[in-house]
Amino acid sequence: MNQNQKPNYLFPLIVVFIVCFLIGFITTMNNSMIAFCTDAFKLTAQQGQYVNTAFYGAYLLSIPFAMLMNKIGYKGTLLLGLAVAGIGFVINSLGINSAIAKNANVYAVFLTCMCIVAMGVVMLQNVANPYVKVLGSPEKGAFRMTLSQALNSVATTVAPIFITTFIIAGKDPKADNAGSYVPGPFLGLGIFTLIICLILVFLKLPDPDKDVKQEDEVDAFATSTTKYKSSAFKYPHVWLCALAIFMYMGVEIGVPSMLPYKFRDMMGENSDYSTVATSFLAFYWGGMMVGRFIGAGILTKFKPRNLLATCLFLGAVCILLSIFLPGKAGIWCMLAAGLFHSVMWPLIFNLGLEELGPNTKTASGIINTGVIGGALLTPIMGMVVDKSNVLVASACLFIFYAYILWFCIFGSRIGLKKS
Image (cartoon, rainbow, N blue to C red; front, side):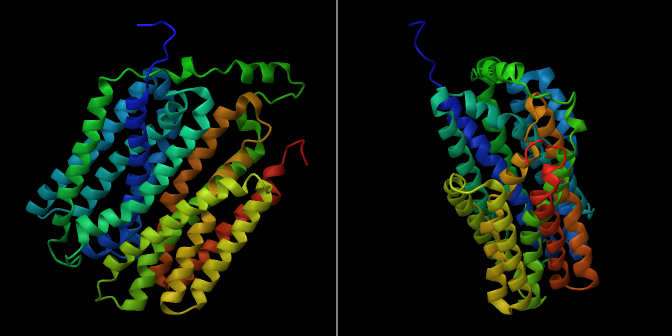
């Protein structure tokens, strides 16, 4: 073999793209189960939101898992993440069948196992992007990253359709045996994930730490006249950004989490509102997908702060209209908010990473912990639904929007030299 011949990473890259798809699919699939679980397990709105708590609560382990990755490497973390997620699905399937047979708490089994699945997803998110970056020529790295994000967005749109088609379509979510609808599809997902894991065992993958050239970045920090602080923990805007991500999760996850209750109010509690609401979630996540593609082009023409402020305003307008407009009109306005939520994550995140130099990687870990907002804010909104109604709960979103706007205009500038 010619020593100068470049390795062919096409097949490994395809497998890693599948992993990127799985990350988006599993994350959105979990949220799409809320309406079904609420009916199947006879839950209050707050109890139904524990689906989000079980999943996003796993992000508390983001930093420990990053430390684990330093010990076992990128490929080891990738394999472990797939194994944990796959086993979580299999245990979920077997555990639900066992719980039904023993007349035990099926919902508790479901939440526990989805938390295990989420732990695997957190590990996968730590390694997926670095692998996409190194599996191929450096000059096409941006293209591969864009493609991986596109696949992630497609997955978020497909996931609600999967739940509707394979779990609840043509069935009664309120039936006493509704929990038995879950094991088959979840067992299939678990087996598929474990097969991907097994394939990766036999693939030779590069080490991002060794194969991504970082000399230019290091030299830039070394020759820069900017004096950086000794730790990312000393930058106020990093912590404020983590809180902004916390609030953003309340926005992104809060809308699809409240949608079933909006349909329940419109169609009646004894209707098949949960099936209809789950199918409509594809429009919300589809709007997020379209917004990401449009946003990629718009970002080159507008300042990030201006774009974020505009999206926050338009998203808030959509929610305001959804509160006051009756019936389907209000629901479509709620779904339209996804179009404006689509670019908020990268815009908020990048504002938190300004002027950090060598502290950037540590700051990313700090900011990522804000994802637990999805675990904590949605049950609070569910409690508001139980004590009042979905319209009052939806109004909570304006608090989240307001903080993110404050961070965009003021908080992200605290402690920075740039105006």
